[in-house]
Image 1 (cartoon, rainbow, N blue to C red):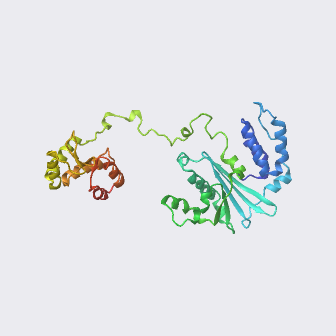
Image 2: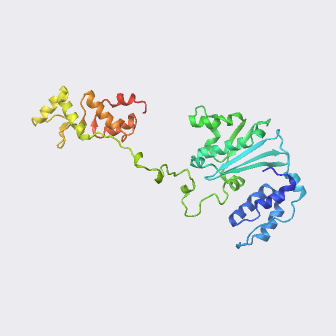
Image 3: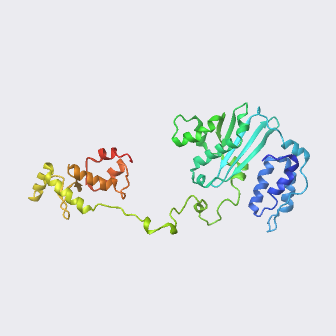
Length: 348
């Protein structure tokens, strides 16, 4: 917001000519007098004349009169690269706001403001990355000014964990991507309580961008739900089938391989004679050999390969990886060869 003095009054009328919601009017009344204390008499007059205690429907506001010239001269100050500079950012669920200020002998003066609504993909970010997004966008918006500063500037946020972000020694791939652009600037991040972000709340919490009462919050983001295949695009030629091996065929292969395995053949013979073998038993329905209630898969390469293809390579299995494959298979089977097989899977 960089306006010449002659256009302040017209621009304010354009921005706040008609305020339909009393809450939004009250926000303007609370925030901007605290920043532009020179306009206090103008806003006080508007509030006393246009906002009775019980505001009726006809609560339109029109700023009348001209702003005092001395107020304009105090507000419209040229930025000085040698003065201490502060960048304040805040991000809500549906908008972000930033304020650029400088501190002189006469006090803190606001230089510029920035407020925007994130794109649909950015609405899905976690709060940590939303706050970081506000910092990055503020630096991009005022890049030319901030790079010309002779002193290190300060970034004020209300998210305490981010104040150590630029000093982290080990970054994830995503964090390294976010840290690339801010690394061009000389600044420090300081955390402060959110109750001090009154001006930023007016920039990032404006009415009209949030869902109405009772409306599903997630439905406001078009990226949250998308119809990948439309109804008119579904054609018989686009259907596909998946070949899945029958488990009955696999049972037959396991039974035959068990009798060929010398280790398990002797156990099966003992069990067929009615003798008991420690930890081993026969399944009553499939007659498969069980070890502690888990189906034994014999040491036969062909059977093991078919078994793993069914439980790992099949589209219904979906290449779950080594740990998940082990966890799923061990629920029903006793195996000792899964790790080697899955470790050679390039997709996992």
